Length: 387
Image (cartoon, rainbow, N blue to C red; front, side, top):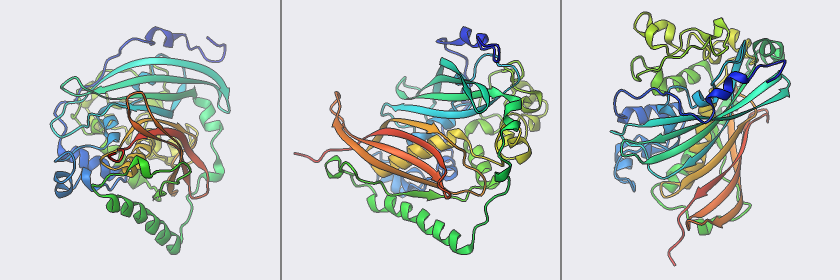
């Protein structure tokens, strides 16, 4: 409880499973292909039939990042419960645990969502609530796929507009030479995937201090963000049996609440339910509304940034490796006109209690100006060479 921000309504939800919105049909091959396309992840094993059939799985499987594409709230639902009057929300980060089973065509993914905790702090936005909640993804056989612990940042609506950086309203201008350089660097990481192919990346060959190859993509645009948005299954009319929620009752301002993902309005006027145009998500694609929540222009989705982290690390690991745990702390947005540059350093190697050979990394995401977008750590399981 605070004189500045009454958080008491959140308490009743903590630790209690909440409702979710189930998929209406099993995962389709094109759901997976659409996802890797939208996430800028050109790993042939996730979209090319010949490559997929020759892989260790013998067919198409989704990347580790795909679980979040099956959720109705980008993983934020259990981290956004309770009423905070006149508030806005941004993603603050994700922690993931992956258990092994991969999502494949024909699967039905369910999500058990449990609000975890929250803290109230003073930030540049004034009183700010950091909420965390767990998403537990499993398949139709009851196998646990992954747990995602998301962090949302909720703050006074007025503070968003008051803190927007007017100097960043305009997109950077890229010369032809700069675009050619970005495209060459982007393809260099694609070539890393090609070079590894179906081979193992051996734990034994990785050394502390090694730098992972950089991954570059962008510049981002309204078009690229819209492509990402459409890859989340919930953002296709009727694809998910949507739960009922009242965003205004949760404290979202009227102009930012709207009818996004409202199952009742979907049958009346589906245009109003599309978060790309109305509701709390439209700030991503419309600078006018981005500036109301503190962003200078169109900006990317936190769930996408978390997926970029997972894809970067799992792509390097190859099909015989797996990200088993990762932490991603979002420090700044992907803005239209900016490029994203990912790097990582190996900081340790270990064998855990389960006998897994792990590579420990620190990962970093920046834009072309050197502004930090995301920091974090991860543990990646790799195969050991036969004795």
